[in-house]
Length: 339
Ligand SMILES: Nc1ncnc2c1ncn2[C@@H]1O[C@H](COP(=O)(O)OP(=O)(O)OP(=O)(O)O)[C@@H](O)[C@H]1O
Image (cartoon, rainbow, N blue to C red; front, top):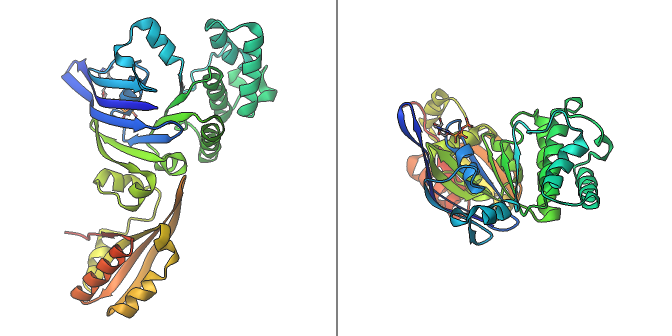
């Protein structure tokens, strides 16, 4: 379990003070995967480094499994850190060591005996699917394989928590998918709690239970993944969502369509996906729904359907129809045209 309570981090720079993280609260329950998404400079890296205190927060408290680590003396902090593994965008492997040694050396430094080191290195290389690469060197591996070695190295310390700092950002989409599948597997099979930072919405979509959207050091929106994908409220969240769904019709087209009705994005989730609501709307109200775009987003814990419709009709009928849809559990977002 990870709890960040009112965490702030201020840096002194040439141009004065920079508040990289500003009063952020995060609560990741045991066994969950939470993701922090934001653009470059939002404060994500600083925030995740505060979890294992690679960066000391200026204000706030960090709790790992109920223990407040921010006030621990160094030997106890080292112990607490052993419960936290970390993987990075750049893999951080030792170039001159074999795959096996990349995993074995940190274990030896932690004082494990030879048999235990071998046992763990072999076990975790098998889990990440690289048993046959023990004798290879990092420069003989693909980016995805390097990240698998880094994951095995992190797992070999048998942490309860894994922090992922843009672990898939340097990888192509197919390799990204395979690494995300691996993270899902270790979360499920080993019960490891994961906190990740990313600027890619597809990472959030595929593996996260809960999402935090960060901007200028603040968490500007947070929710469980299904709610966030169904009813985003902050413009930055909507912008990130537009990268994975066909949300963007041109403002000119939307303005033209507004003359004869509303242009609305409907999001279906849970029970609402099974009901013929658009057919019902045209029977109950004097409106005609015309589907402009549609897609389905598969999340870790469910499926969200998106339809953008042009709802043609008189204003009062259109509003009543939209209210009916909303009351039936559909997410309703009016799309604005050119102002
Ligand atoms: N050591 C530091 N000294 C001064 N300013 C810093 C330091 N580290 C980060 N910052 C500043 O804090 C802000 C947040 O940076 P951070 O790297 O945490 O953001 P980010 O969301 O992870 O972005 P990126 O994905 O580009 O790394 C930025 O304005 C950055 O310039």
